[in-house]
Image 1 (cartoon, rainbow, N blue to C red):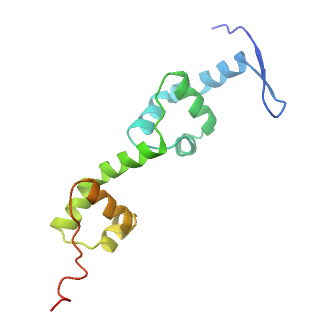
Image 2: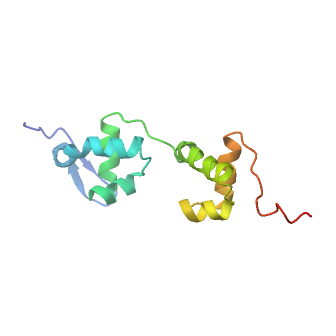
Image 3: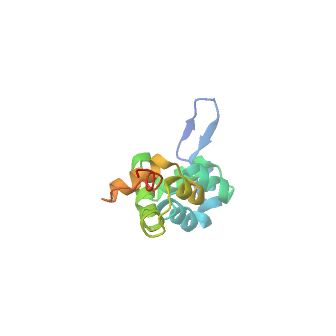
Length: 136
């Protein structure tokens, strides 16, 4: 495939990059596109995390996903989706297994405020198992 240099772009550091250079970058990483999309949408990984796993610069991941029209996920939306994904596990551990926030946090690597927020957003009222039995 022949790529025609249509324009030359000068970046803020004085590095000159052409459309041909960008096309070569895309061609070099295009075979990883499905993995990038899967990790970005399903596993909710950031550009940096995807780049680290696939050994690709994060800015190439960002360019490639935007070039193919993959909608960006804001940090707030990513956090909301992560809490939704964690709800079932946290709910089971807290209500069925009667574990405290500290025990759940150690098991899944999350903080007590995060666990409380997940339960509240899921419509559940957390139970303070640390206080049960102390009120006698």
